[in-house]
Length: 163
Ligand code: ADP
Image (cartoon, rainbow, N blue to C red; front, side, top):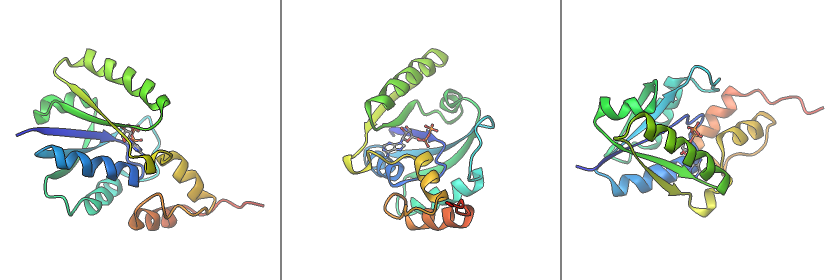
């Protein structure tokens, strides 16, 4: 069994995240999608909301398990006995950040292996933070996120007065 895990904030999940999840699910026998809880980062969606959205969006994939994790992702490796960590990379700027993070994680737990998935070109510009900002101004984010996420964003965000 080749298992892997894909950690992130997923606040909220986008088509970019789902693309990585679907591609990784085809390669690995089992993929854990890990909603990393970080109290230092203020999130728009609660952990339960993010878990629920990802579970609904991946219900067609039988080899996915969506879990929440509190603490260092390197500790997830030991707890779930899964050493392959997937990270998605968009632009070169992502790569610099992800490479440094990989070095840090490797120094914290030498058993971890990190695999980078380059984004598919149509998802190049998708970023949760930008999507939240566009949505908060009442912009159209329907092409960037699945419908249930667009609806959840609409419920969550009262458009900021543009006057
Ligand atoms: P984090 O807060 O840990 O950066 P995110 O939820 O932003 O978590 O992203 C989780 C993972 O998904 C990261 O590896 C990130 O690079 C990747 N990712 C996010 N958006 C995209 C996208 N559009 N295409 C490919 N990978 C992406």
